[in-house]
Every structure is written in C-alpha cells, then in structure tokens.
Image (tube, rainbow, N blue to C red; front, side):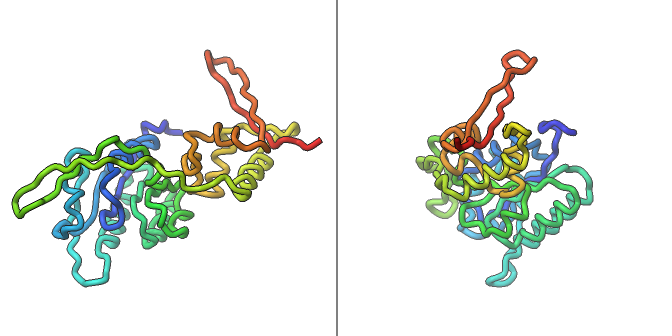
Length: 259
C-alpha cells in the first residue's frame, strides 16, 4: 500500500461553482491525501465573475483551462473537465482524483472513476447535491476549512488597472449538530466492528463511518478530530492503550452498557 505522500492526485476545479477565497485551504486539505500531480481549473476566463480567481492561480501553480460558453444556459466547463478527467485516467499517471465543485453534474464522473479503482475526493460548498456527495469516497465541505486571517484578492477597478483588496476571512462554520442520527451512525459502526467485550479500534470505526456517509467529518460538528467528538457524547467511552512504540497509543471505543 502506498503512503499518502506517494499517492498521486489529479485536482480538477470547476471555477463556475467554487469561490476563490479559500484556495489555500483547499490545497492544504488535498495535500493530506496525496501529492497533486495535475492541478487544473476550468472556466470562461473572459467572464468578469471569474476575475477574482486570476490573482491566486499563479501563487498556487494551478493551470487555467479556457472554456468558452458557446450557448447561453449550457455549462461547457463540465464537459471539458469530464473529458480531461478521462484522458488523465487512461494516462495511468495518478492514483486518485479531487473534484472541486458544488455541481451534481459530476456525479456520474465520480462513479466512473471509482469503477476504475480510483480514489475520489470531492470538495464543495454545503449546497452540493447529495448524489454527488455519495458518489465520492470522501466529501469535504469548503465551509469547514481553515482560512487565512486575511485574504488578498486582485480586482480590476478600472479598465487596465488592477489593485489588491484585503478581505477578512470568515471563521470555519459549524455545519451540523450532533443529533440522534449521528449518534446512531457512530454506535452502529462501533457495534459492527466490536470484539466480544464491545471494544472497537477507533481508526477502523472512522473508516467504516466514512464508507457509510462520505461527507462525515468531525469538523462539520465543530470538532477538530473524531476523538473529541465521541468524548462529547455520553453514550460512548474511550480507552487509550499503550503500544510498543515510544509514546504510542491505540484508541478504542465502545457503546456504554446500561446496568
């Protein structure tokens, strides 16, 4: 099995459906899962609505792909991304794809890539339709990503004159509450993996939860990691066990038994 640093990723960004303000947060998040080999962003760069992207592309070494909107109401960007994705797939130069969009039109693409044994990570806003979310191995909401304290954007105030505008970045949002459905999801996953004494290895529990619900992320609930999320729920208990490695510990979790 490859280490994360050896996993090669193709990052394809739909500029029409993603804000440019958190490109740094996006790329830092993607780096957790592998090394971006391809970084491409698609849009009609003649549109004034995409002006904000131009100032951040060089900083992030992302290749802009021009796609003219030939017909009103049709999204030519989607077709260009899909064609490129299939070309990259058949080149056999990557191990996975990051599709950055809030558009459900990429649902079938995500499914096709997974059929080809590709890892597929989706990133998009909270408004992303559920079919695209569940078509990915993992889906990350942009609203929970950490952002720099100040965002620098380049705007064109007058024709031919550009100036930098500094915008205060918003804090990551808490998107969901820990409700009964979330607790049931965690409890059922623990039960599925538990040994005879009811304990399950937390790493395996997290992986199983993600398979059941690709957009599950502790950060959606305001927690940095799964451990503090589970600790906040009274129905579960955690056990940290020493390992042979120096300062190494394995974390196990189980559903509390009622006496």
